[in-house]
Length: 441
Image 1: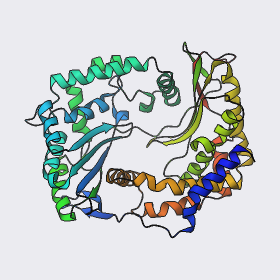
Image 2: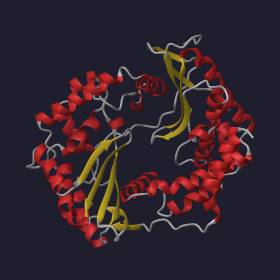
Image 3: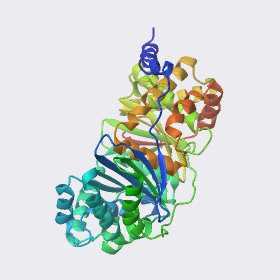
Image 4: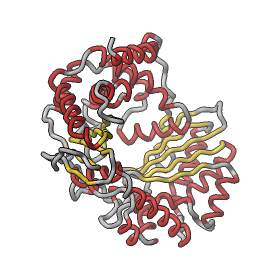
């Protein structure tokens, strides 16, 4: 028996047992509308005296103007570096005194905050949250310190083949679209990002209209509504942020090589993917699990690494940005094996588009995905994050319960259709960082 068959059998055994058991109900989600009209999804958990909140606002690094790349992440990170009458150290001490965790961040499409607190300290936690959102200070010392840290991170990234590959991939895949720019600061953008630019970002993005809010923990709906209105209700009603327009991933006929003095090469390849709102999304996620998302059990791992030993790592993923859908793959290999490894990856994707997958692969992927799904919900904070993700994607409150059925409904016909959509054209953007032998670009 081939090793892949053994691995698939183990996955079916470990993950498939639960398929014969009664379906477990997901957490009970209550949809609350506060007196000020803010919608909150709440999962009550009175057995643990804690509260976890997750919130996001539409608008992230892709809303940064050209030349101010990375502003969003810097600005959001600085919201806990002093607010109101509290300077940076005093604000951090106030959090520590009550064991409150408060973290702001930004990715390409969203700005976010996570709050975790003991129930008994929830009033103070929401007070500090309100201060950070509505009265951030952006004092000279924390701004200089944060920018210095970002400058070090940028310089270190110049020695990272993966970072260089990702930057060049974004530039060529998206051109002059905001997705084509950096999401973190460069040395040049750090020179332009001043206090005024930092302060402008939260004022433009943090509003009630573009807010998604999820809470899990020991709190009654009426108490939560009061706290939410007092904190998030202080935000302006409408955001003033520019959102990126839809854009298609661009491919190229020849690989693009970035010379880098290293015995190994890092390779990225990508093509248009499938949007999260697309009816084929669930079939696409199952197919990706089979192709390269399943680590030791994936087709590419088996064919390129296990059988031939050509790569150190290989994998694929679907990235459904709000304005673009991306299918991407990555691998790392020695410079002398780049050409052969790339050939095999492309050949395997073409073979799947032509022949589909076998029934055992499909069953194992679905079993793993449904069996591992509850691992995403192992803490109050994780559940709160899931609530926000569901809201941002337009999913209904019964999604958690519905997920196994959505995955198990994927059949061979859906897999073949998606494989044709993704791989039939054999048309990819390929970026190689290293010193590959025999590869023109």
